[in-house]
Every structure is written in C-alpha cells, then in structure tokens.
Image (cartoon, rainbow, N blue to C red; front, side, top):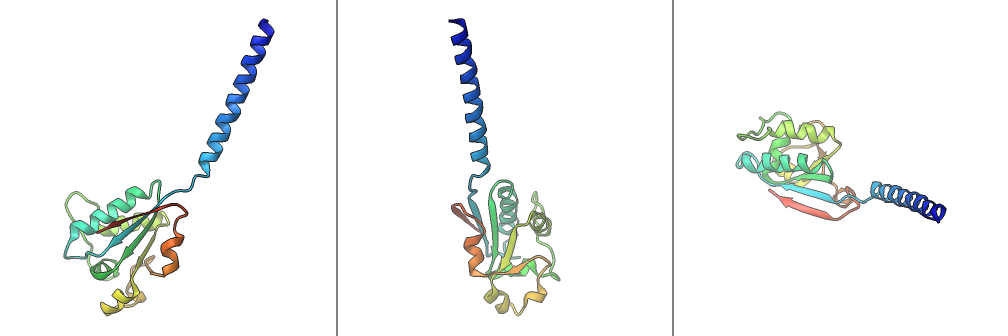
Length: 148
C-alpha cells in the first residue's frame, strides 16, 4: 500500500510539473495588445503632448505601442524646433528618444506635415511618415486608442 501511495505521489508531482511547464510555454506566446497613441496637440498644449508620450513609454513596457502625430503635433518632431516641456514630466524629446530606442514607431500625418510647409527631411531622425498599413500591423492583439 505504501508503494502505491508513493507511486501516485510521484506521478502527481511529475504531471503537475509538466502542466506548469506547458502553461509557462503557452504564456510566452501570448499575443500582446496594442496601444495606439494619437497626439494632435503641439506647443499650444504642452501638458497633453508630454502626457501622451509618458503614457506611450509606460505602455511600451508590456504592450505594443504606435505613436501617431497629426494637426499641431507635427511641430514637436521637427528637428529644428524647440523641445516641449511641462513640470513633473520628461520632456518630449526625452520620451521620444526612449520610445525610438525601444523600437516604437512614431510617425506623422503626411498631409499635416505638408500643411505645415514641411517635408520628411525636416523630421527628427527616426520619425516616419505614416502609412496606413502600419496602423494595423503594429500589433496582433486588440488595439486601444488614447487621444491627446
């Protein structure tokens, strides 16, 4: 009887270990959700700009992130323009550098860039011109949108 109980205990232990290893392996392949950060504010609303970029950097830790700038926001990613700051937040350029270093896509609306009288050559290094396919291709999971 003692042998049967010992054998059952060992089999239970092996089975539990295999199940745990399988769950861990399945968790490694979980599809991450994406966060689409839409920034339309520029120098007219610095709090919105730096808050949006701060949210993007926070979300990038465990979510797929895509940052899209249009309307007045194209001004903040022009290489010769001044930085955007607001008390208690990292500056826009600090956050943009962090995001780009993490491989996060930051892009601008081509129409808004043109309306501002600027071109791709006026953008900070690493900033891209938006292409519609990238709006959906940045994540395999659900997409949450935050507008600033």
